[in-house]
Amino acid sequence: MDVTQADERTLVDRIVAYDDAWNRHDLAAILAFHTHDSVFQSHTTGELATGKAAIERMITKLFRVFPDLTFTFRRMYARRDLVVQEWTAHATHSCPIPTKARMFPPTGLQLAWDGVDIIPMQGGLIVRKDAYVDSAALLTQLQRASIAP
Image (tube, rainbow, N blue to C red; front, top):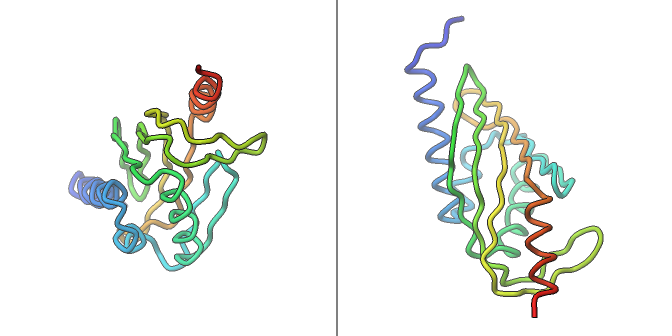
């Protein structure tokens, strides 16, 4: 089956709207882009959420840790039923951030880190989202902030 530029444009338009919902923290709109049995995996935290209820809990926890989280989307690739996008996240370190090694208390500093999403889609809905984050860059910022005078 050939994929036309119009099909790819539709995928891009869907993901742009999805990204906008993320930046507005509109959880209902975010979930509306997922299939009922969608899978969302954070390869940074190791979290795996299957189904909209689990995805909602996962995103709610993320928004709780980063209440002003926004994304700048740098590149997007859409082919057939697959979207890959590169982004930079921005957030104020206003809440404690737990890691496997330790808890980082709030510093009030602005944080930024890069990531990539791999998003297979079906019928215009997200079947799976795999998020990969430059956790080394984020951890470096947190460590510097925790030792700053």
